[in-house]
Length: 530
Image (cartoon, rainbow, N blue to C red; front, top):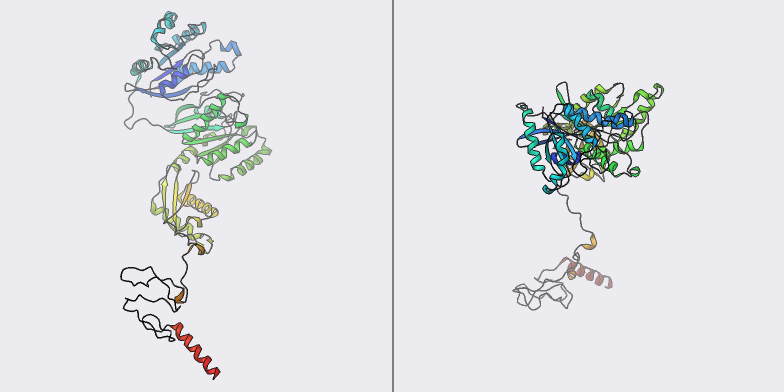
């Protein structure tokens, strides 16, 4: 268990900016508008060989119960109090530009009552020349003090060392095999689908603020817990609405964080609202996850609100929408009553196990042979795809490469058939699976069109061109003979002997088949005349 450091303070003093600086990542959304952070956001820091966890919290309003009658402000305050009770060290953040306010004093009393070690951090101090003025009023609180600027980085190096020194006494020895990271699960869905309620139901406590108001969760929140000796991390995300209806910059950032979290998680749980029915946005999210090859399951929530007469109709609607990804498992649950929620974690474990599977080449080739023998590939233009071997190119999720004589001979329908056979023969039922077809050798260059070929030689030797004269050839080389009786050699050539006139002899003194046929035809004509 890591030492836990909690960032606490009234709204808009820069806690989230300081949190991002400490964890060296933009993990918490920051905005000039007060009250952006609502839930507890966790991060890890290693400084001076000390590893510790940091919690960002929403702005504390001790009089929230009186302000909104137990509404959102009260929920945010309760989350901050939970973080304080969980923490080993409290970092009390105040605004050096505003000076001490009555709200700062009220928060300090709440923190002091916890009995935890406290470090007072005066934020928005942009340089050493401003320290004296910015910190003057806060000495009255009696806490150890540090001056920083989360926006510009002033004083942060010293602050990190001081926090590490405060955390060191709470360090516990880690197991010999190192810390278990556990399974990371992302909750994704439209606003108000019940994602936070489902997280609370699985964790067993109110870790996330839940409300009937859509958009209660604004940031992606990591929630770690253990169950049956296994560690899990839930990432609760903001609801994802259609891009066309998002006009707020804060919501745009929240949606980006939500989709990004789904890509980083081991398994994504797409939470849908059974009572509201399947929407176009739900279908877009399904298509997005399929396109990204994201391992995911579908949890159809709020089934307790669906009348029994319409249950089968609801199931049929979701089955139709998921035809594009028949491998994705679907659970029908109720986060409120807990019905069906006990199946989620075991199912996530099974999906993850399939994603990291590694299969030997021998088993793959046996599966390929069985699949292609059972149903041969179709004939395309009098040719059929011939499969040579199969290999696994990647895992998490798995990708398989078929080597064939010509990848263009594999039709989409046959590729779909092979994917289904691989799932069946290799036991990959729920993980995304990719198949690639690759030609085992370079394709031969297509034959050139007839018009681009070199001219063919004629049947008669007279159509042939004489090669250009070279060494040892006579003066007449390369010139067509004036007599029209075929090419002749130069005067100096040993074979340059003239054929007797009328006999059709060619160079070299041998009669050709053409001259013999000509002589025969003349003899026949003479006989007719006679």
